[in-house]
Length: 82
Image (cartoon, rainbow, N blue to C red; front, side, top):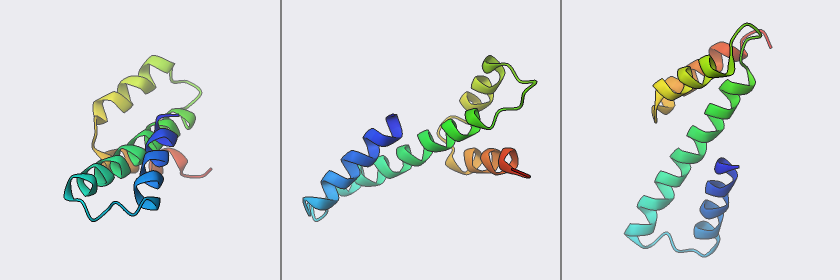
């Protein structure tokens, strides 16, 4: 739901054609990154292994913090063969 909220705000800014303001460009960029981060974290949790506890998966995701590159790598490795 967080990713959806960020995506909604991204669409509002874009549709209002407000990207000429520098302050909104920065917020737009941050919202895109946060949308990707939330989506990747949810995907990693959904792709958790049967033998992993919810706490273990949560800690794996939490350790990645805001690093979208590491989150993407983790999601790719978990999605392999699926």
